[in-house]
Length: 423
Image (cartoon, rainbow, N blue to C red; front, side, top):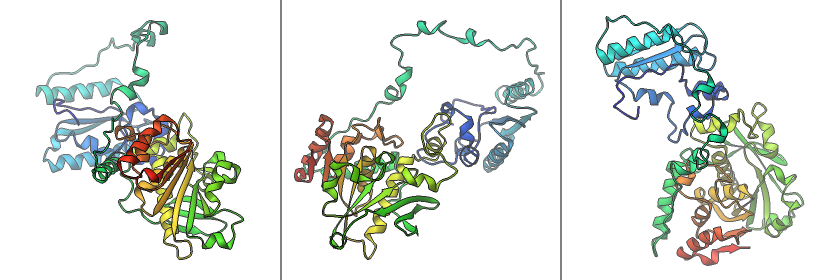
């Protein structure tokens, strides 16, 4: 698809579609080596369609458990339509062998015949499979005989850091902060947050109780409630605070002294975003806990151009918009989170203007630690992301680390030094 020097393509038992990988959980049967981050949220078969009108043979087996026939039929039927648009139906064909996931003689013969026809214009030469074909044993395929022979300067284990280097963000020139911020947010939307609408879609109450169930998008549910023991005076206050909870909180922010001052004069609520804490119970058929293998939730999101953390940013913004527009709960809402949750709160404030203040407690210094968004390090890292909040008031508890000097510099360039507090 990417290189037109390839004149003929034959995918062999190696391609299915998103309905299989995600809806039928086929991703659980595969390793990450065959997948890509679906940044632009393509139908997976779009990649195969880009080969057209060059000759392509779609070769499979009828009882392959990891590339099943129902997916094969969906793909080849789409390909027939694509080649028909080019009036090049003669360039697309399929071969279905009988058996499981294997590379049998009948497949090889069909492939060599297809190559002969489209590369040599030869339809008459007899094609035979080699009778002497025997698989090589694993040890004979090793480049280095033993593990001790591996090069000490190997970079394979960190190729994700070296193949495409992380972005080096140039800070805004004097007087151009607004223009710089607009451009950086546009890059984030293109590379990492395409699933988020330009205007945040307001969440909806599904069930209102002490801890309400809130839908932030179709079939995506989170929990939202208010802190206990809040008096009428706090309720009438114009200041509001939402705390983005994480499972380790074990009951909420009251356990942590560092958080208490931020709740003292505000009417306060709490959000458990998708897959977090008690909100896990809303998804009885999914295990949101990262595990390997198969780590289905995280990996399926990447195939769709998301990450669970992208969705959690949406959860915060959509819930705040719901509360902001409520007749009784409106006024100014701030967001607070600890660790990675604090960074999720910060990103929500970047995309939802009704969030008037952000408090981040003990944040990670880099997205390498989380939260995780597709391609985000190609755009910026956490210190720059926090700087983008300017001039929104920002408090970083545990923010005296030199990494956040970068955040302070951006606030200075924005003329908003007084809006940043580091403790």
